[in-house]
Length: 292
Ligand code: PAF
Image (cartoon, rainbow, N blue to C red):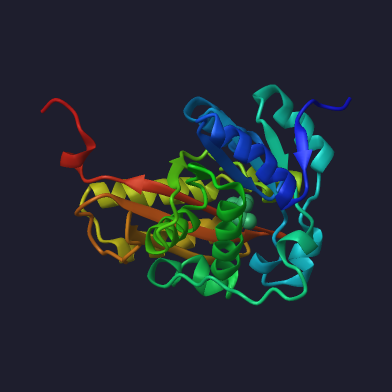
């Protein structure tokens, strides 16, 4: 069954659509993706549809953000299934450029964001955030979107994109959309497809451990002890390796030991072939709201 979403592959075709919309005074939202869509992506499309007159979903498996050739080769490519999933959500255009359109042979520019891209995934995936920042900048220039929607599941990526957009004065508003989870807490991710049935049973342990860190912070316990315990817990549950569990200030991603303002507890760990990442917020009691 084919869908009615218009698929465009060239910058000229994309610009043809966008120019017409802008001439009519319509706002344009973009949802950048690498395909292999799941309910987390569809929540981004829903948010974009609510906020913008026109919505572009981009689909491009960006080679520059993969530090390992085997990871890039194994990444799921499911364009027709993606189109079918998108159809009921009614985006105006699926922009699925070719590799040559995005990176012609002469391509020689890299966008590199300091500060927020250091540590966490930045430390374990060298070059990853340069690749993300470079492709997202290109997608912003190509789509000329007014608003862009990203999942909070990739929390460090979201902060990198916020910093980059602000530093480069790119006229696009960045909207973070809360993580969509399975009933047992596992964050939806295209990489969950790599899990065996047994690993799928183990996977929610990552979220449970991060939530326990957040609870401990709210009770006044120090981050260093809580994160060390969480790493033990994740390993004990059956993960083969833990890249990190850390507590950071929510906006700057500066490491913190005690909860003073809004914080994020972030973790990344390996389960079989899958590297799973997740994060949860932690708010000091007074900032959590309530009537007292
Ligand atoms: O989050 C993703 O899927 C990718 O990193 C993004 C933002 C589409 C850039 O390739």
